[in-house]
Image 1 (spheres, rainbow over the protein chains, first blue to last red):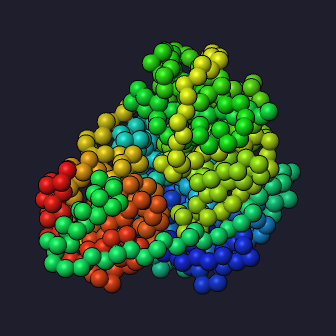
Image 2 (cartoon, rainbow over the protein chains, first blue to last red):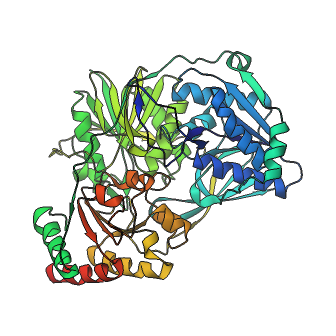
Amino acid sequence: MNVFVLIKQVPDTEAMLSVKDGNSIKEDNIKWIISPYDEYSLEEAIKLKEKESDVIVNVITLGPDRVESVLRSALAMGADNGIHIECSEDLDISARSRILAEAVKNESEPDIVFIGRQAIDDDSNQTHILVSEYLDLPVTTNITSFKYENGKVIVEREVEGGDIETIEMDTPCVVTASKALNTPRYASLMGIMKAKKIPLKKVSLSELGDISIEKKTNTKRLFAPPEKAPGRILEGEPEDMVKELVKILKDEAKVL
Amino acid sequence: MSNSAIYIEIKNGKIRKNVNEVVSIAKTSGSTIYGIIFANDIQGFKDQLKGFDKIINVKGEDLDFHPDLYSQTITEIISENNIEYFLGSYTFQAKEIFPRVAGKLTEASLINDCISYDFKSNTATKPVYSGKLLKEIEILNKIKLITFRPNVFPTEELEAGSPEMIEKAVSGVKRSRVLEVKKSESKSIDLMDAEIIVSGGRGMKEKENFKLLEDLAGLLNAGIGASRAAVDSEFATYNMQVGQTGKVVNPKLYIACGISGAIQHFVGMKTSKIIVAINKDSEAPIFKKADYGIVGDLFKIVPMLKEELEKVL
């Protein structure tokens, strides 16, 4: 079975970010990680490989040379192949999604494609579905459990209000991970050593054929939101502070 | 003049209040405003349909929400009616529909979760990195798909009017099958709808102590949230997590109990109108971000707060 995991390299969630030249972030001192939702996808793909005998886990990422690190991490966790689509240009979301879809097709006919439900950098929350549309495959988003049985994928997902839907799709299909799906493993030392020896496959955009990467959206400005004015720490005995707080919430802030 | 269309979402038999926010934004475009509603019997909604010039009423045997059917039908409506702007509130359903429509139309681009949009320059502003930064994005494509963050925009008084009604049959093929729906056992308020949220962090110490927050939330009719630390320690479940890898909420009042205020949590609740922090560590970063802070033991303060609130509510 050909399983694909599409991952993105993003700044760590704890990173403090600042803006460079008004339209990008300063990259010095940033710790880069696999976008968390992509990492849940990856873990689920590796679990599937451990359960079924014929699974090949192919991990694809797109970007400049620095994104190699997430492929190494993925291989160390247990993925079979790392594919780096080389591109240092700043592309818009629809171009990125088209490239990722073509990159999958360029390898082989996929059976299951795993993606995170959202990357935590641009928060555009559409790449996973756009890739599915461009691959013309059914997709179920935000999954919290995953099962593969006889050519069918059965997943659970949390929908609005906390209800849980059980959904079935025929393969080939796309599933996109929520946090509740699993807890990603730490790579073992042996895994890390082994991963270093696996050659990464490098693919240039031109090898993927004629994909339109013309910008349909253009980033005009990236900036820090205005800082909130510092608040007030209440003082006195606990009883007094609580009384004062309730009074403020009711009469001044009027939020009760 | 251009045409705009708005997705009219129905929740629990009513039109979502956020639809009015989107209509108010669409009014600034000066375009003809279409509403798209999926309902076999529209009578009950008529007095809630405000500010529209035309209503496209989608009908069909099975109108239960399914992303494949809804997105295919809307894609056809956009093409058939020369819609230039397709707008909606950034809700659970919109997150499913809008990207599918963007993928099906060759000349469309989507920007999600916008906090402003200028129709003259076709420029959206949206939070990125969970709101650590903001980004201005210009849409160059012919068809512009935009979803707006709920509860951020004021709603204008809109008039009911008498929009032209157009019928449309639902279309598309379901490519995933819903086998079962388990209703949520939790009676707590959905965080995305809650006007008040009471939230707990690592300082709650154990799962059972969330009972304290439940009591307070019950009184305030509030939702119950949690920090990533509390979820990772299994005091709370993931559907309660507020933050960069959880839900991004914007209630009127957010009460953070025993939450230190890591950036990843803060970005998930910073647009709350009022933030209250209760924490025993006076150095906790949350106090720099809260509007009001109480330094003290939450196990004393929270019950006291509940008692005091009972007197005034």
